[in-house]
Length: 117
Image 1: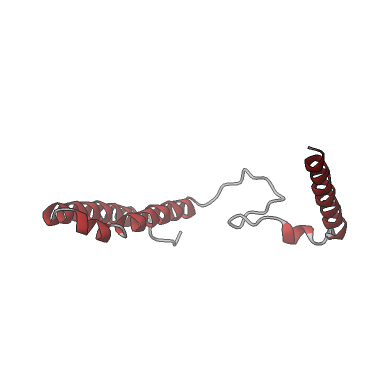
Image 2: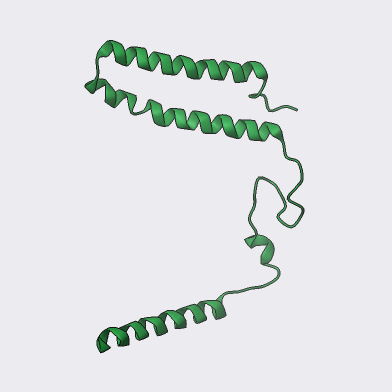
């Protein structure tokens, strides 16, 4: 028991020394503060966070996410061909692709895919 407590104290001391050294060595200059600030979609982190943003940017991001998820659903379809009936596999895949194409056509008609203001 004594050996475990001694080893725990040594581990604690080593970690404290490393944390102290890293805080002393790290540079915390005012000039580096701008470099270390996060960059979020062109927003300045020092100003108000309640400024309006482009709705088109939001729609393009949502469309990207939808079609990104679509790719993750399309890729395993080839593996499922081995384990299912050919006609049910074809029907399922064509139905899935038609639904996605209808969504893409709707977005195209609504003008969500055009970036110009």
